Length: 614
Image (cartoon, rainbow, N blue to C red; front, side, top):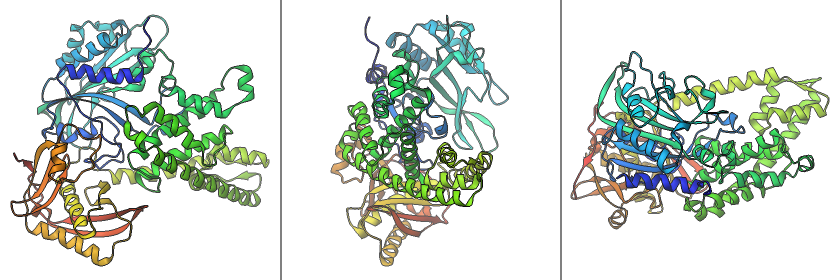
């Protein structure tokens, strides 16, 4: 019997299969979205491809395949069980107006049964049940039956289960069909609509065939796309016949490293690891793997946005280490990071390249959190002296929110002092905090993933003008380090070691407005990475780029104001921006400054930059 496929084998087999089916292999994007800054992280393989799903021409063609590193934190409190992850790899293939349901289903079935050699009896399918917006997807079901899936293995489920999008309030959307693998006991039977707990989803084909407008009406799209997602970790668990994702070949060594550090005598004698021990080891594995990837993509711990999420992940991992009695004095997280890089560095070469930097960042944060924990213990003792036999919920939440004390740790400390903790009061304070955070996030990112409105398109173009102006005023050492755009403002992070003077800020603002007043044309052309370098286009030349790239040029025959690699979208002429104003210049992190700016005026309806042949 041949050995089970490794995660690396599965990843490569997926890319090879779709390459053989005329798909261009494109590199995965960084975890920090470049051309869709309305979200903090890349949460799905389709995020970097939104402009192309909306109709822009992709440099590599209309059949694409990739493996995308992703991060989702909505289920962070569930991490520690057998299946939840914050960081994961999503394999995806894409049709941009090329094949549709028949091609997608045929290739999905072929990859599952012929490449992965999964018996079709172990598979079941779900399709969209239909509603007032769109009909029942009988077409997809018939296509599944045509390749050998029997009727009883096909479930028709509602929009909540088998429909994707739109990502914002409006935009492309459509039914999907999901593929499931049998994980129940005995012989496979029925389908996810009957015995859902026995079937695990491993692949999802989305058929983008409708557009939802601002009135909630669904109309057929001119360009119909296919967007698929297949989780590598879940697929590896299936192929390697393990009970949960933490036992697959790339995660098991990380869990094992942590368990060896735990070194519990009782568990060694019994030969059985307690479930609570496993939970904390899995939390550490997931969170530190995520932290390694986030740091590798240029983020540093901080108090807002991506930096805050990174800090939260690292500190949650250290709290689990504390629960396991593992020493955490600056050397723990770097050691785990080394194991993560060993498992992933061959495919994700940038992790090996930046390994020392990743380890240094983790060590610094671990030490800093250790000091916060010590200060928190002092605050706890002060609270104990003032309390009676119960520590109030507000104080328990303050220890959690400010010093990173999990409620379980506060309860343990309270018990040592013959006290109880008002858990109900803590939960109330925690829920109030979550509500505020959720409302803030909804407001901040209300534009949605596919928000390529006139406002965000103007602001996106303005970041190119700003980047060019900063380089002209401050020097060629300036490079973009991050950005975030809402419908109201842009935020732009750039490399620079010192605070800008008021004169420099004014000079940059004036230069951008001059370019706007000149109403310069904006266009793009397709070229190779090497030729983009030769023509001095600005970009971070690493593995994120494919063989062809888009270079956006702002200027005319007599003046080129900006030339930058980007995916779009942009306005057709700078005069459409109205006017530009810098609202704030501040520090973002060591060696990185941040500008917040707005554009005002200009037409409500805009033209989008078009391709220009070179």
